[in-house]
Amino acid sequence: MPKPFREVLNSGEFVVTAEIGPPKGTNLESMLHHIDLLKDRIHALNVTDNQSSVMRFPSVSTSIMIKGRGGEPVLQMTGRDRNRLALQSDLLAAYYGGVRNVLCLTGDSIKVGDHKEAKSVFDLDSVQLVKMVRTMESGFDLGGNELEGAVEFCVGAIVTPEANPIEPQLMKFEKKVEAGAEFFQTQAIYDLERFKDFMKYARQFDVKILAGLVLLVSSRMAKFMNANVPGIFVPDELIDEMANVPKGKGNALRKGIEIAGRMIKEIKDEKICDGVHIMAIGKEDKVPDILEAAGM
Amino acid sequence: MKTITEQKSFDQIQECLEKDEKVYIIGCGTCATMCHTGGKYEVLEMKEKLQEAGKEVVGWMVIPTTCDDLTNDALKDQADKIEKADSILVMACAFGTQTVASFSDKPTYPALDTLFIGKEGGEFGLFAEVCQQCGDCVIAYTGGICPVTKCAKGLLNGPCGGTNDGKCEEDPEKDCAWTLIYKRLEELGKLDSMKKYYPPRNHQKVDKPGKVLIGSREESE
Image (cartoon, rainbow over all chains, first blue to last red; front, side, top):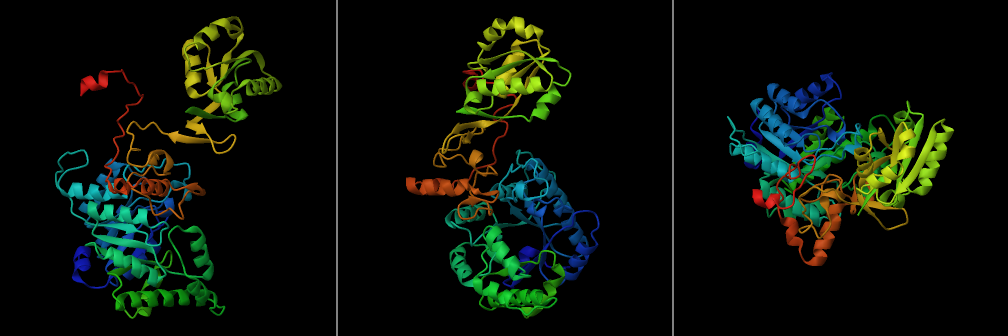
């Protein structure tokens, strides 16, 4: 049995989580393979909720499945697709299924996804979502009605240290802390010096911070993210490092794994933050290689 | 504040009028004229198009303010022509179209889609939404900038992670409402109001359909 995630967070141990992205459809073979591959290697598996507004297999069912297979799931919940009734009832289902960790997010815009004409909900924003979990823990729903059997969750949220301007993001970060978030995953970071500045600020709060790492697979991907993904900034040196890899199958991916491993090692050795969250986006089977590259 | 409209496609309009031979067209002299969707010029253009499509246009008029009750008088004035029509095509906002429908026993069809309540500004012909009429105004705390309308997600507690260089993740041309709010509050020396926690909205503040009897709200409290 894996240790409860909150226990891990509070143990002082260097925390490692990775993202699990459910597929579009009912063929779960590849995802289940990733889950089984990682469940005993890392502290928790973090399941995305219709990531990038693309309709997929649900995060609640996947999280319960992870629990059933002996892993520790972190359920991602966004306010984009469900109103407060649906979010609360899903949380009851997750709790009953053994899920004890929830990550509260706003959710991407419907417009970036594959159902562009859908109604976007956003009945609750990420701060209100954190607060919703805490309210349910007190034994009541958001309507003020008593629950027959409450819930208890380790609650996380997101922060984007590279956002520009940063001040409004930090104000929201503080609202999430105030609302009861215990841990934060960051948007992908690549510049550790800049991240250290963020950590100087974040250390004043009693929360755990996991640095988000997206596995680079090519210099093109890095440039694409710089141009298109808000809050991600890959420095030129890393882009060059990826670009200078000799041509050949798998070389760029190996370099990406090396870079991710190197960053994790540095974060861990220098105790920059409390852990890392690895987003391998479709290359989840490479997470063990990344950990090996990090000397873990 | 104006009701901002756009014309439905001619195919959609023809679909409504499929079984009708004779049509009466009504335009509106206020918002739809300003939006160039239902003024005199557009009404005459529609008349031409319908005739080309084989319809008989038995008459037309542009009512000064179609949503007003005076529309009833205008309809009575044109009663002999409207009488001959199988249906009325209204080139006004949904409010104007519903007003015509309420005063006439003829089938009434909208030629326009009603988009939002907005204002003209910035450049000629540019209309921007200013209020979603949510019934729970928060702009006292957001520097007079409405996050319900201006933020693509209508967020109340600050920006999402999709904002970049002050722009919105949906469209790099679109300003991030919360960056605007932050800058405005900073100028006003009121950044503290951005730290305020907003609980989930009361979406039943205005029942559907909205209805208010002056004085009744206070009495019920």
